Length: 240
Image 1 (cartoon, rainbow, N blue to C red):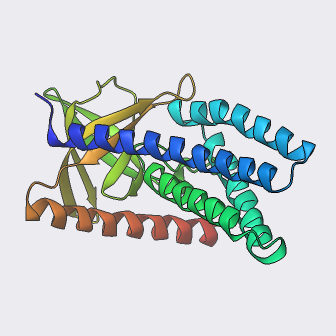
Image 2: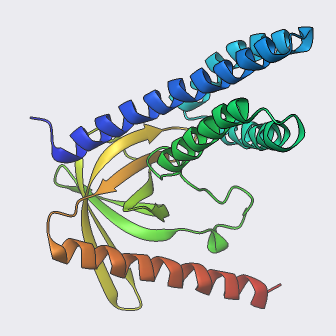
C-alpha cells in the first residue's frame, strides 16, 4: 500500500513536470509572438534553439545532473533581460507578460527541486573530511544498524551518505548525538544516487511528521546541524 509520503512525492514529481512543460510553452509562445511583431531570422534561430534545449534540459532533471542549476541560472538571467527589454525598451507589454509568467514558473520549479531529495548540497570543495558540512548518524533499516553521514538538511528532508544498499520506499530510523544531546527521527527513502565508485550511496530521505513530537525533534536536529557546522568552521579557521 502506498504511504502518504510516497503519494506526496509522486504528486510533487507531477507538479515539477507540469511546471517544466508550462515554462517552455510560455518561452516558445513569447518568441513566436516576437516573430509576429517583427519577423527576423535571428528570432527563428532562437526559437529553434529553445525547442532543442527542452530535451537536454529535461534530462538534467530526470538524471538529477547538477548542470541543471547552470542551465537554470542562465535561463533566469536571459528571461530577466527579455522582461526589461520588452517592458522598457521595445514597449511590448504583452510579450513582456509572457516572459514574466515563464520567469515565475522557472522560480517555482527551482524551488521544488532545491531539496535534498533531488539535489543534495555536498561540500565538494572541502577535501578534509573534518571540516565538511555533515553530521555523524546511525541508520537502522531492516533490523540492521549502519554508520552514516547526514550531509544535507533542508525543507524537512535530509541527505544521508551510506555504503549499504537500501531500496526506494524503505523506512529508516536515524539517530545522532552531539554534546550528549540525542535525536531520533523516522524517515523514508525517496531517492538514491551513486556519483563515484568507492564513494557512499546518496539517499534522499523525507522525514515523517505524523506527530507534534516528531516536528520538535526535527527542529532540535536542525539546531544540532547548524551548531556542528559552526563548530567545524571555527575549528578550520583556528587551524588556518
